[in-house]
Length: 259
Image (cartoon, rainbow, N blue to C red):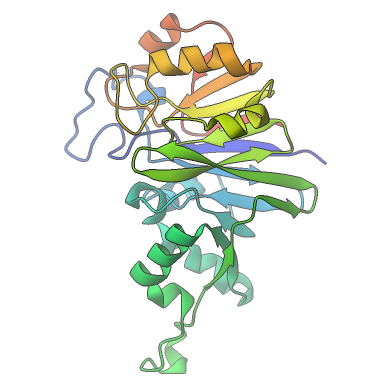
């Protein structure tokens, strides 16, 4: 059974261009510089697993012709990873079953507080209006097996919080928001086929990897292929690509790899 990983969104928290039209150093003529906020998808014949609900989720799913979501994994509680959650409602309407979502304790508490209507029926709204709870919260465990897709969830440092990374079938790690891999977990990232990882900008940042840090990390954990995501407006696709070795490439919206 084939498994695909789709990078739905590869941009930083404000996207490229920003809402005011600012492209920064990115060439607006290059479509690979059009970046929506970070989300990703794991897709097989039996499973369609969404990672994070970007504010750009509706556009991302339409663009990639995704008509089914079986479950959702959340990396952390920040707005650029969560605030597209309402667009999951349509997948509830398909079969009238709550969609299972998986999050750590902090993210779970944030989602249930901020988007309470997604998880709890509102007794003040008549049933005839059909606005029931659409999502079912589940605790994110260290390991999940969904059909033939094994997910290892590993926390990474993301400044003053942790953000979950997800390793798929021991082959591909997805870490969209990270500053540091903890020493106790470094073995899990060694010699992967693919590493899809945060690379915000050239300059150092307190809660994201920059390019220099990624180049140093790759020398240590030695993935066969590295794909950079969460790219800010100062990282033009072609200019960045020229600076990288052949086994490291900038990601772009809609980029698909076969696992």
